[in-house]
Amino acid sequence: MGYSFDVLIVGSGLAGLTTALYLAEKRQVGIITKRGLLDGASDWAQGGIATVLAPEDSIESHVQDTLIAGAGLCSEAVTRHVANHGPEMIQWLIAQGVPFTRDPKNTTGYHLTREGGHSQRRIIHAADATGHAVQTALVEQLKAHPNITLLEQHIAVDLITDAKLGRDGKRCYGLYALNKAEGNVVTIAANSTVLASGGTGKVYLYTTNPDVATGDGVAIAWRAGCQVANMEFIQFHPTCLYHPHAKSFLITEAVRGEGGLLKLPDGTRFMPEHDARAELAPRDVVARAIDFEMKKRGLDCVYLDISHQPAAFIHEHFPTIYERCLALGIDITRQAIPVVPAAHYSCGGVLTDLNARTAVDHLYAVGEVACTGLHGANRLASNSLLECLVFGRAAAEDILQRAITPLPVLLEWDESRVTDADEEIVIAHNWDELRRFMWDYVGIVRTNKRLARALHRIQLLTEEIDEYYKNFRVSNDLLELRNLVLTAELIVRCAVLRQESRGLHFSRDYPGLLPQAENTVLTP
Image (cartoon, rainbow, N blue to C red; front, side, top):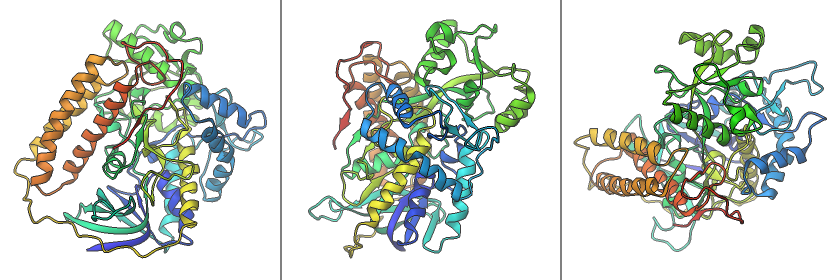
């Protein structure tokens, strides 16, 4: 069985939903998501959305803060474009019914918080569960729209391009997707395809990302002929809750923005020794400081303490974190929170332009899967949801300017020469090995030797997985592992090419900065 849409969107996070809602009045839109609608990283986002709303703030200030965090690699044109369009995108969200936290004392009518790297309070939020509030509101709009078809439990296998059809050209016509509920691969035809599939966090052992963040979009775009860029810049969030029963639970940047202090087990602060901005330094600085202190002292974690703030303030501003920690026996109004760094956000991805176009015609990439030029070598806190909004709309507007054309006949998925897998345990072992050596060798601090070891192991794993893929029917776990290993290879290859320490990429072999900041671009 197959499907055909004017536009196919891969992923149901904020970037995908924004694109869909802007298209739906004039196009038939299909959305595939590999689990449920709310299972992506957008729904987990706590902190908020950075944009200029207060009269004492300015677009110029937001631009400069972003450029400084990006360590010389942000595109200034892209940064200005995103900052300029931020306020109107927030108004669009408010019109969709997003319940941002109000503050009658603020001239904007909303409470604005501040996070590391920002010179002003400019983070609009819905308590400490902004992503969930935004996603829930947009899903209500989406479900009510007759022109949007949702296919849950569908994971992309590969894009269908001219090359796959034996034609000249470099155009995308849709993709093959595994229907996980029924176990069969379906053909989905589309005039335009939008990758909004999120990030790559599950390539690492410790991550704040949901289980679905397996680099699928980057991998299938690379196989289809897209360029990728800056994959070496993996943002490690400094403060992930450290507890055996707290899988991937993030402690938002805003806790430090509202006065939270990082401490050693004996209660001593350490951030002032690492950076003059102390707890409000950008994430890469804070993550490296925590990593340094943990390794130097043999610690399992450090502690984030906001207990000096009034209990009522904590309940009001961080209700989700308070409840989650309390369920694990930690009362954050009286106790410090045990935290460790964890892989959080990929600043690189599929290379796109201001219209979200990739190098493959009729293929777009929006959100974390894309490398737009906004984040440079380090993403400024809360710029990611803003990027999803601005580029989601940009992709939709570009698609609407294109005529709908007849598509060629697409080949059905051929399973005639494969059998059911005999030992699924191979996939589990390879998955575990990959995530452990990526954490050990391609983590917060890197060396040439570590990167070489990682690349060698990746090559061995790739051979095993390719053999497996050719001989057995595809499964969700096999597809995710295939994509993760390819994504890991692209991260390591970019890291090897960057012979300096800039932003999120810190190399012991090249601790200095090169005089000229250059993007790391890989071409298939």
